[in-house]
Length: 163
Length: 123
Image 1 (cartoon, one colour):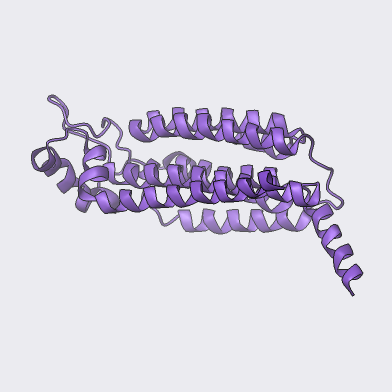
Image 2 (cartoon, rainbow over the protein chains, first blue to last red):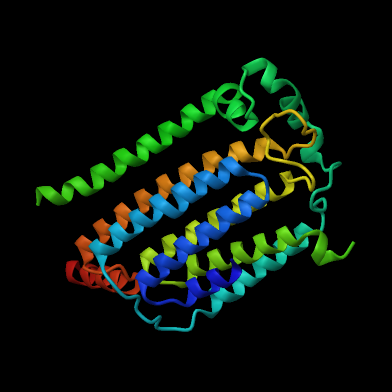
């Protein structure tokens, strides 16, 4: 996955970059399956690798081709990125280890959801139960965001036709 | 516990995040910038999902015969994040297409050069 990102940074042909991004999304979906996040993996494969690629190819058709060579070597962004990486690596030292059952994430509300969700909502899939039942208003807000984005896209691309 | 072994997922997250950020900042092509933004976003998916995994656990679908489940809450959050991420990507691409029509280019340098030329003309 990391190799795909490096290739993505170096690739100047935009079509190649889009294909690399699609590969990257599928790898991410595979990793998510390995991490037991099957719902998320399905969404990532369908939306990240599928819909995103279609959108990117559509935009590529409209804007076309190749990326120009940068005029200066982008040294400052490189230094900045590595500095951020170093800060993140430092912050990471304070996080609990991988798959530690006593990590804070596992000892708060999650256990309660796992124990009570099937009885309270009647849905055996806890992710669905939380998404649609306990946090239904958040999902409603999410659909509002998607609706707004869709309206924005239509508004932006419609002006074009009038010309 | 070795530093790399115990926190392998965090290291991957950091590499992806830094890579995405580098593409986002360093590349002048607007389409490439959006790809970098998407990579940056998906590194955050990994940051959220990985701590929820329990080795020996299974996906959080309650069934007979399983007692250990991965944490469902990050999954819910990231489902929302993926969908919102695609919505922002679509909006960004629409803006890129509009910029291309207005300026004839999606390279940041050329767009800025044209803006400066327009400003000089107006003066």
